[in-house]
Amino acid sequence: MKKGIIGKKIGMTQIFDEKGNVIPVTLIEAGPCVVAQKKTAENDGYDAVQLGFVDVKEKHVNKAEKGHFEKAGVSLKKHLKEFRLDDCSAINVGDVITVDTFAAGEKVDVTGMTKGHGYSGVIKRWNHHHLRMTHGTGPIHRQPGSMGVIDPAHIFKNKKMAGQYGNEKVTVQNLKIVKIDSEKNLIAVKGAIPGAKAGIVFIRDSIKA
Image 1 (cartoon, rainbow, N blue to C red):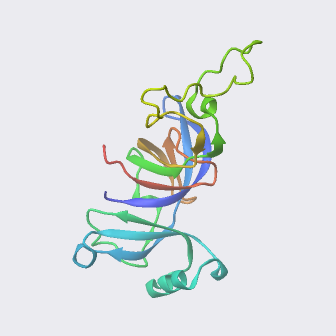
Image 2: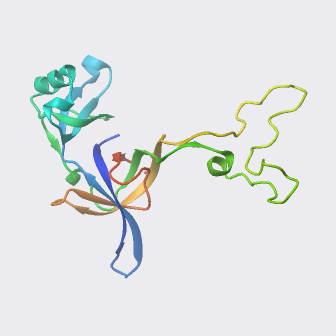
Image 3: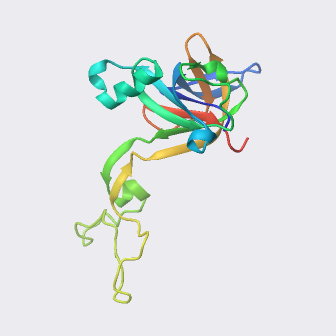
């Protein structure tokens, strides 16, 4: 990976290209992020930078976090994320990373937490069909059905059942950057990204590009 940045999902909209074609895009408020820590192959075994995003009051950080930011000489941040880089020799602690790191036309991977739906049944979670909504079926219209048989007398692994749905980390790859607004710290990427509005996302250059 060559570069990365932390952002906040604003929402989806659409823009028009030079030919008048409609392009669905997601707006992300990316950065500015400050480098809170730098790791090198000599000291840590790998090259990486730790970025901080969104200023926060002192009462919202503990003593260990406060000492970490004071050591780096940067303001307190709400979100921290480490990005492993191929080469971070040109980056130092205290540097500010902005949307200008990326350019329109580049491909990026976006990681975020999907919307949480809580404990959900098999119809909502796995798109199962329900039973016939007629008399005689009984109160089992939305149940998952048979769990197993007499032999081997246990439920097989990966059986689709009710459970926690959503609220998991998902990465969408190869999204094209359509437009960048440096003044407002906005990146417009083509298509949808994981998470709800105002959710924190991590943007990095695409590994498949």
